[in-house]
Amino acid sequence: MTTNVVNAIFVQESFSTQAVLVHVRGFIGQVAWSATGMILLTRLTRGIKVWTEDGLCKRTIDRPHSVSSIAWLPNSETQFFSVEGSDVFKLDTKER
Image (cartoon, rainbow, N blue to C red; front, side, top):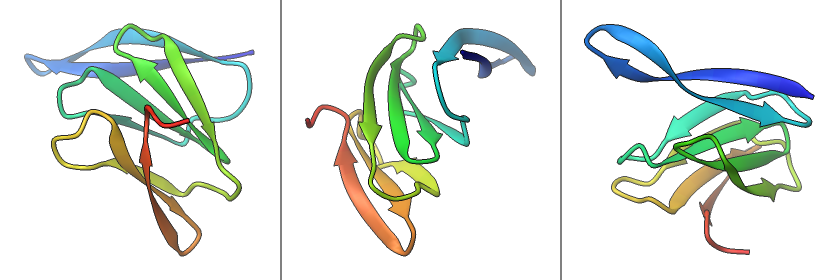
């Protein structure tokens, strides 16, 4: 089990630990907070994890190809882009 600490809050020119994210597999290659800071995405080699602001993993989205980047759509709490090779996919945190 790998434990990753994400320093996610910037307040008064200092950082504080928001949550400790526990991954049972994989390396966190990128993090992306939603516009309101309520949802966090973490990018794995072949997937994306969806986290609450309290560090609870709500969902793991497995992808068939290597994920090179993730980015939220403007003003969205559910939709984001996943860059996989030369393709860009529009995904939703709530879709199954």
